[in-house]
Image: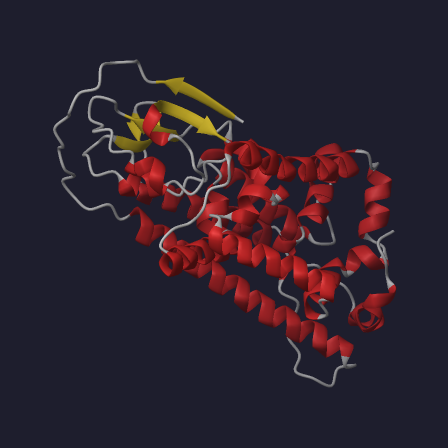
Length: 349
């Protein structure tokens, strides 16, 4: 899934290091974004739990309004709503925030190289801190053999293909019937209950993914996440990419060693890869002034420009949804009083 431009071959020579004029601040900036977005998701999660408990108990607990941000965790419903919108021009009445969040994440990944995964996604943030924990504890992370890595990486694209086929094969009336049925109305509650009442098999799967993520960098993101696979495909059309200036590079390979996606940054001039998350770890690790940059063509794209662009896209698209009245799912309380206490009775149609 990568398009590469190979550096011209040349006899190896020892190059003089021209150190950076100023320290790289991309990683503190990116981690600030990760922290804010993780905190936002935790707040949404707590509020949504209180919302669900209120209706489960028949109104005997503290009331909290349903947070629209929870719909960011419903990518399949958002994909369905996107199809309906593109084919009919009608914005959804149910889960509209999910559609606009999906568009915001897709736009950020299209323009800024799958940046949703490394700058915003809470699952990506947790995954990153798990492998950092592993590196700190055991002194290293492990990389799977190339043949196994390639085979496992295909899994997320297989899963994505299955979801795209399922949504693509549904007609607009079928999508509307699904989303407006009992399961579609409370699919967010079903998702919460899956983790609240995790069975032995589910707990074992989650445990395996967590343990694997400690030893292998971004195990979930790299091998299993279909959402990340979609963002990666969108990023293939991104105008920005990592660029290595061969004349300034001292061939220390620190960039390749630090790349969480195990990309051969040190051997290419420019490259586009569906695995590059725009995390800028390679740029931060490079000791040579101007040797490695994120760029659009020949124009350098600093980390603050990426940060500002991601923020503008996210806040602008979500702000428009709120301003235009397409953010909240407005349903009568009686619907929630009827459906939420009986969520376990509604299976997938």
